[in-house]
Image (cartoon, rainbow, N blue to C red; front, side, top):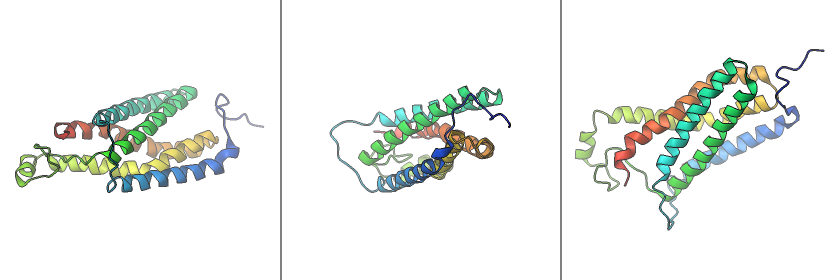
Length: 198
């Protein structure tokens, strides 16, 4: 009988079905929230204007955790690799909570809106005409990939938890760079938008 790969890691193959169901339910719930928060605004009495900076910081730390994750797995340090991924996932969950809380309570900030009236005049649009296409490319790729990627991130984690190492590796080859891109472009979007926050 062959020894189990990575005996230092606990695995839970019996949880595979439940974890997949939870992955799909959680991903669907997040997707619904993201669509709803664009149209529904909840009035609150406290100031949440600090949340975009928090979100950018959480994204930046997620990117750092992902770099450590890659570093550790390349060196065969699988427990450290797992811990770095748990950190990245935990930071991403906190980010999601803060992101949803902010967008459910605050109007959208528009790139180039220098007078902070929530509208983009022709003059304001012209003033950022050179950089706006770059901003939109980064923003749209960031949002699109974040939306598509969530279930794949979770399924990659599920495959590790259930000990399906070869499937985990195959998925991670594609998921890791995309997740890293999303984590890295979050702070970039924030820094580009920062002059236009009220």
